[in-house]
Image 1 (cartoon, rainbow, N blue to C red):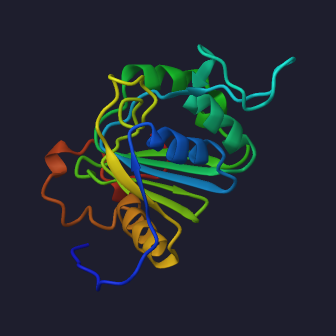
Image 2: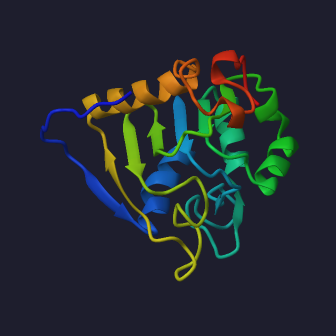
Amino acid sequence: MDFVRQHRPVHLALVAGRGHYEAVVKTAMHAERSLWIATANLKELMVEDERARPGRRRTASRAGEFRSALEVLAEAVGRGVEVRILHASPPSTPFRAELRRLPGLRRPARGSFALRLCPRVHFKAVVVDGAMLYLGSANWTGAGLGAKGEGRRNFELGFLSRDDLLLDEVQGYFDRIWRGAECDACKLRDRCPKPLAACGGPR
């Protein structure tokens, strides 16, 4: 888990502020196969409602028309998408309330949805369909991902890439933590509510 890779050319797109919402959140909400999220903080995230409505185009969101990102993810899981969220601190109260409201996430008929908590997770990453990677400073929160208004959102920076080797590295790192491969050697077990090595499903 400790490494420095050799320098090599990689195509990246730098993202800041509202760019996180446009490039990361919108792509995540349209995942077709899988969505992996790593975040230190996990909060309820409201996204623009892009559902088709009579009299307006599908993507023409009006002010005030928002819905929970979890509701969008529940629809994706219903289509067979695998969603994994790896987080360091307990989810916010609104996040937990919304999760309880959505039985399609707690007991999906298709796809899968799982949360796993590890207090040592501090990297922030979003991997969509194994093909698009975000790495940066932003947590999975409205303030972090540019969903808040100007003057209220955090100052965040990150980058996007579709580089295959970089995707493989990050997914391998994520999956090793997800599977609990580091649990036996962990020195923070007193802060861990349940070792990932013993985790048999979503919590």
